[in-house]
Amino acid sequence: MMYTFPNKLRNLAITFMVIGMLGLVYGFISAPNNIEEAKKMAGTHGEGHDGEVYETLEMNHDKKTVHVDENQEISQSIESEHNSSHDEHLFHQLTNKPWAALYVAAFFFFMISLGTLAFYAIQRAAQAGWSPVLYRVMEGITGYLLPGGIIVIVILALSGMHYNHLFIWMDPEVVAHDELIAGKIGYLNTPFFLIRAIIFLFGWVTYRYFSRKFSLAQDHSDNISNHKKNFRISAGFLVFFIYTESIMSWDWIMSIDPHWFSTLFGWYVLASMLVSGVTMIALITIYLKSKGYLEFVNDSHIHDLGKFMFGFSVFWTYLWFSQFMLIWFSNIPEEVTYFITRIEDYNLPFFGMLILNFLFPLLILMNSDFKRNNYFIVMAGIIIIIGHYIDVFNMIMPSAVGDKWFIGIPEIGGFLFFLGLFIFIVFRELTKVPLLAKGDPFIGESERFHY
Amino acid sequence: MASNQVVVHALYDDDDVLLSAVKEIRSAKYNIEEVYTPFPVHGLDKALGLEETRLAIMAFIYGCIGITVATVMMNYIMIEDWPQDIGGKPSFSYLENMPAFVPIMFELTVFFAAHLMVITFYLRSKLWPFKKAENPNPLTTDDKFLVEIKVEDNEKELKALLKKSGAIDVSIIENPE
Image 1 (tube, rainbow over the protein chains, first blue to last red):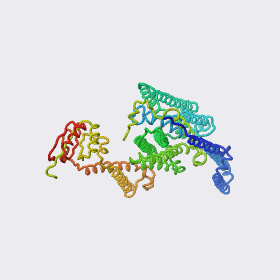
Image 2 (cartoon, each protein chain N blue to C red; image 1 turned 45 degrees about the vertical axis):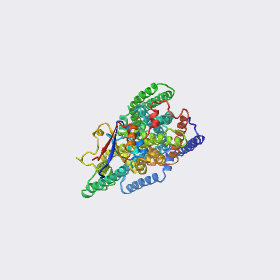
Image 3 (cartoon, chains in turn blue, yellow; image 1 turned 90 degrees about the vertical axis):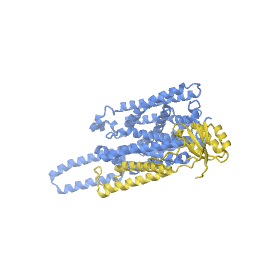
Image 4 (cartoon, chains in turn purple, brown; image 1 turned 120 degrees about the vertical axis):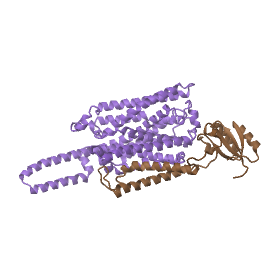
């Protein structure tokens, strides 16, 4: 049975996109255009700071002689220089805000698609018997890979053209005064950065294109040569993926904080990616089933997806904790600042996401019967999706906007815009071919699959 | 124990045949006493209509006990009895030092859940070291499956049914140990 994109859902997706676009536009319009505006927006904070400095200067002035006065002039000029660099920093943070809101959401939905692609490749390479009934759903989600990836790369390119200040190492002014970044310039430079991004996306999309092609060809084939080809390219893709995914996470996320690095960051992002991807597969499968499609998907398939949601959530927590605990314990200044800003300025999202991404999935999905119940899977799934959006938020925002974060109109707008786009593209992809990969050699096993 | 108990032992050599035979026997309203298998047969518990195990609930409770023991123990050792400066952050509060204790809390959760679960399983199955094996036929430790059914003057029909269901051998045992 072919799936038709219901008008109601299409309208919902378009509404999300329009509302989201308005939110983003509002964010860009309300961002300050110059330093003066930024100072005004920050309001009382800047004034209080100036006042304090002024008072201490006055006190000095009263007590000291002419000789000291000279010194004081110098210190005053240093103070004002400090203030102006502070203001410039504030200005950058506030102009970054809508960009960061856009980037977090764009990356998050792209990441869901990429995680699904990796999960799909694992099923192919492992020649899994349980999952072929879900292949078309997975292929639908990975349909978002190309448009989503292009949007992310366009945002990165705009950063490279200095439309925003997300990646401070792209600013030659900053690099000139920063020995650490200057030492990394051979790797962290805009042209090479963009070339890498394009190579990665090209590799992933190429695999997706051929895998989809072989998967569709297998439906109308009397031998399993397409299946075998798919197996081979999937195994090759996984090797390519694990390297490029790691480098991608350093480039696109970790380099926002160019002084800080973590050796397991690639794994950490991968875990987030996989759990969001599997959750999205489960949510879309349950949605389609509730509309009367995917009649060949039974409780056991949902149960298995639930197990993966549970397992990857715990895996994510393990990596999050491995990263956090070592840095927290050793307390090395250049490392621990990463977590100090998050604990001090981002306390609620930072610890809140542990409840959303660990405690809820752990307690809800632990029971075997709950994993066979669509209601619990959907509830846990929505919490996981929100939790991992906040995870990406925590990875990007602290270095981009500092303590000026807020989940307000631009952030929600960005999320809604990309949610709408994601729904629109994924469900349109689902309408293109029958929802059952009927030619797959394991399809019989998958349809009979029971636990 | 009844003085003159008669049971029938049906041997099978395939787990799929066993599963369908068990379903057949149960639908013919015979009471299966016990099934002996060399390995856990997937779906056999459901086919036999056994009650679902409550071991999982016990595992959760044991895990909760484990994490509690770890918390109380580490709090006593590291915070109360001999306050320690952990990671150069002398806060002397369990909550603020918790990241350092998470591995221990995790390990003891697993330790308690796993060991107590095994002990519970032994107790519930009445197993202990050096216990004499209960399985009536040593073949069930190799590659055969044995179904034990009590006989109540229906020997003939039962034997026929078992033969039909794919048993490779059906024998009547009087006064089994």
